[in-house]
Image (cartoon, rainbow, N blue to C red; front, top):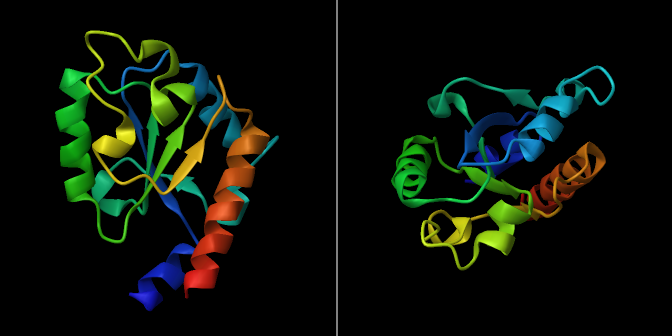
Length: 141
C-alpha cells in the first residue's frame, strides 16, 4: 500500500466527473491546463478513462441520476483512488441543500480526500489544494 501511495506523489492522472455543474468550476479546471498555469509540468494529466485515473475530480451537485453514476465510476477506479471535490456545490450543496433533486453530498456517496471550496475556486486554490494533498500523501509513506 505504501508503494502505491508513493507513486501517487509523482504523477496524478485525473478523471473529471461533472455532477450537473454550472460549468464555472469546469472552466477553472480547464484553465489549469493552459500554458498560464500548466499543471502538466507537475505530472497532473486529465485522462479520458476512469480505469486509468488515480484521482476522481468531482464538480457540481449530485442528483438522483449522477449519484448512481458516481458510485459506479468510483468502483471502476484502480485503488487507492483519491476523490477531490471542487467548488462549493461539490463540497456541501450550498445553495441546493433544500432542493428536491439533490439527495446528498458527494462525501455521502464516495469518500472525499480533499475539498476545494469556492464559487468557482481560482486555479491557484486548486493547485494549492493538490499540493497539500500530495504533501499529506508523502507523510503517510
